[in-house]
Image (cartoon, rainbow, N blue to C red; front, side, top):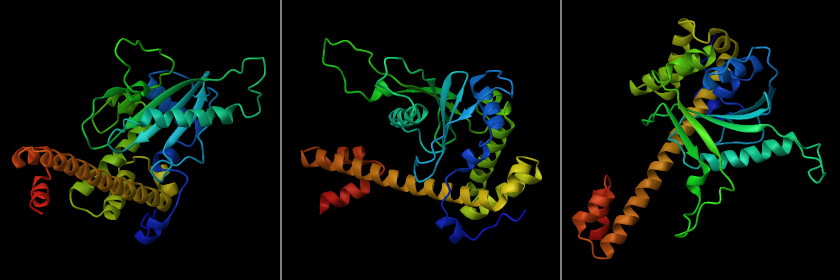
Length: 288
């Protein structure tokens, strides 16, 4: 295998799949993954219909899987960055598009009820920030608060289970899918190499080679060598860009909030505490 590809070509490449969705592109692998994360025991010959949308981009790459199994429409998202509280809203939009595609040949104005699979949402988290092994995100947390004395109507809710799949987390779930276990190993190896000071390209190349040598996802990585290297390079480059944008947005928000408080009369030292860790920038603004 010769996975090394020039960085310039990687940076300009566009793929409809991410490493995650490419790895789980076959029904049998998806079924093993679902059995692991749902703690179910569907036989590997269980009918499964892949319904992943091919025209939905998230952060410049595709990282969703959706499929129908046993009357359930499962939307599964791989999520590397900080947990996004707006994920339930995004999943609602995604669900609407999948349902529209699912019933495209049906007449919604018919007097007969159109049967649709019940939805289930799962987010696999492998970001760097601390997060519990399991969590729930709810769409209702985004709703405006009710006026005093009003009771919730309960008209709409969407819940998504979040599973932390970082190394040493939810180990029973991860080890029950050989592909998920391998995926976790590749991601952890890349992260370890980056933390050791390697460039992104070298970190990926070394991680892929090490995993192949250890027998981790060997067939998959050897078969798709250079393409997988491209995918990984683009994914991590995008994640790094997002992290920079998020940090800059947080910096601006903190400085604006602290500057407003200072302009309204809050002592500079207290305003600087609000601006941490950008207190020195606030001091410069206050002295202008």
